[in-house]
Structure formats: C-alpha cells, structure tokens
Image 1 (cartoon, rainbow, N blue to C red):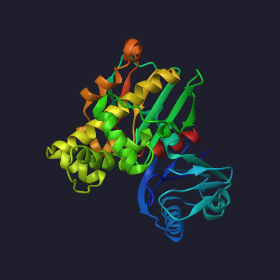
Image 2 (cartoon, rainbow, N blue to C red):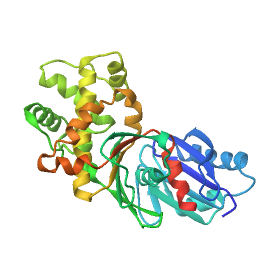
Image 3 (cartoon, rainbow, N blue to C red):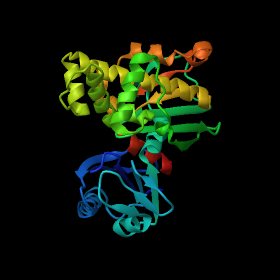
Image 4 (tube, rainbow, N blue to C red):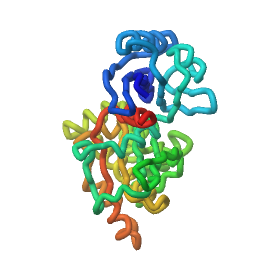
Length: 314
C-alpha cells in the first residue's frame, strides 16, 4: 500500500490526534485537534488531508474509548457517533478500520524499543506466547496479545476492568465499602481510573472522619508532587490494586509478560511507587514464585494508539 493511510485516535475525546503512516511505518505528521462536535471533527479531517496528503488516503483507521458494532463506532467524550459509511464519504476511501483504543495500544507493544519500556519486576523477557496489556485512564483497559509463532500477533479485547475489586485487610475493606456507598458498585475500574483516584481521595478522608477538599485526579497528582501525605496515599492504594490485578491476569491468562500503559500512569509519572507495586504483585501465596518469573513493564512511549493502528497496514 504505497498511498498514505490516515490514522485517527479519539481515546481522549473531545481531543483528537491525526497522523499518517506508509506501509505500517511509525506514524508521521502527528497533529492534535479539538472536536467537541461533528462539524469540528469533519473540518479537522478535511483540513488535515488537504495539508498532509496530496490526495485521498488509501484507508482510514480509527481508535476510540467507545465500542463498536458491525458498522458504527459509538464514541465516549463527544455527542456523536460515526459509521464506516460516514468515514468513507468524508475521506473518499473504501477501507475503514475501527478499533477499541486499548486494543490499538496493545498492538503497539511489540514495536516498543528498549527505551520505551521499563521493567518493574520479573525475570527474562519471553514475548513468544501471550502478553497481557492493562492500564487506567477514563476506564481500566485490558487486552491480550497472542503470538502466531512467526512474528505476528492477534489482539484480544477484554473487559476485566469491570470485574469485582478484591481487597486485602481491614483498611482496604473500609475504603471499598465507603466507595460502594458512594458509587453503588465497586469494580476494579471503580478504583483504578481517573474517577477512581478522586473516589479513593474522597473516601480516605471519610474513613478518617475528615472533610476532604474535592480534587480532580490531576489536582491529586499535583498535591502528591509536593508531598501531601493523603495524595501520596491515594496513588499508592491505586498502585497496589493495579499490581494485584496484574498478577491475577498472569495466572488467569498464563501470560509471559505484562505491560502497564495508559494516560493516567503517564500523568502519575515518577510518583508511581515500584516498591509498593512489586510487593503486591508478588503477594500470591504458593504462586508467588510463578508470577515472580513473569516480567512486568511500564510503557514510556507516546501516541501508542496511533502506532498500534499503523500495524494494521504492514
């Protein structure tokens, strides 16, 4: 496929990122746009094609944090939906691919260079069978990559973020029960997400009979950067729950490796407590030795959704 392919990521909608790939190469000409409505979305697509390409693209691939059926992409973060027919007309193309944004992130993992991932725990890398990819932002994404044995990968979308949140110890139980009172239901995503970070912050104060100042996830992270104890504790609790999920997934999937990714982890940055993560990840009783051999990485690459979309055109 010699003509350029248009890549579009709406995982942070109403923000949108567009890029171009040739023959599945790394995305180029990456640009950010705001598309709060359908008109702004269409204007951005037309304007980008006019400036970055000499004619219509050979295909369009889009990722979003919504869901898809046979013909439609149901978006979250904006008040409109898209069909394959809409994109064919808008971009003058025939081939249109829709992907869940976390599946797109997962497809990018085999392309990561050594400087784009940091090992947290585990043994030698063995990316030959099953890789689990998980991480938080607006939700808690989960996907698996299954090797075909000859260098190719198949991505499987999961909804593990909606599984029940297991807790350990009285303190976590009290936090989870306070969250249940606040939200009505406690899944892993309830505690491991942007909204979850704010909920943990709130209930930590409630459990301590304190009145919290309402803070967003970004504000909690900023407070943690200047050493606010409650803010640091909030992030550490979420980190422990993420670690427990990572080792659960290793056991459930028989994964050879785990990759932690997602915009919330990027926001947390150096506040991510690897010691807390390792301790909880390895807390698997008689299966501790088993999970200790499986390497866990944090991704350190930008625009992974676009990179994953590009792999569709190799």
